[in-house]
Image (spheres, rainbow, N blue to C red):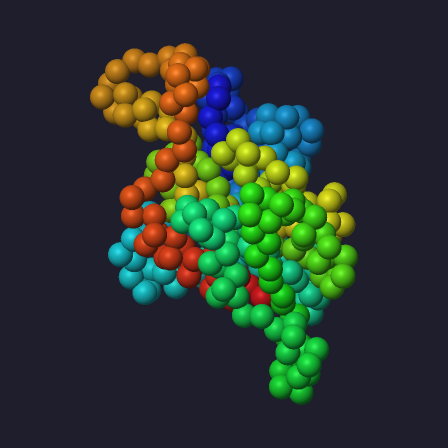
Length: 292
């Protein structure tokens, strides 16, 4: 079945439904936790069979599903930030020591709102590398060295993102990279309401059919944590969900094929995307700052 999605938890559900599986997929471990009305789903791919089923690398994928982001209260926002920080810290601690340097990479196109999350988050990150180098007495010696970059996109730079990031990694030699990007989902309820954290790297543009070279340990020679928020979905998803809501039978594969054939396979984002991106920017950036 053809659906664009970057979300490991959705790929798991799709595979189980398509193969009519009641038990867990071989090579996949999954657990769910509730914190008030926020759901945390941890999917772990443990072998090559799990890799093939989800078309994702062996590793950990954490999805934080939030009920409501627009008009969010200060208390609720802080609760979500705490969850993001806790989950991200747990993954960071698996790969680097508490005083080792980290590079933050904000992916995407800052001039396209649904794709601007990465660049907006980087603007709010607490950068310390230059202070530790030039004003070491002005900062606690145990403070982690943090640097950040927004490399832009191939269409505006003419350079593949991985080439830019690898050049920086080779020069400043961080021990870990955290890459932030906008993602694609197949679930309307997850658009701008979910956060995925993984320790397997990230493929810019993968969810919208514009795959670029991946950022991963294989390409950068350091561990890469991918952190993303789904901001867009396939038009076919909306059509199918609408027909199902009207109790109309639909052959999903046939409908998707027809939409592709007629060039109706659009990528869609909510009309209030500006406000939603701003809300998620604060949650993600503060979650990262707390975890570091």
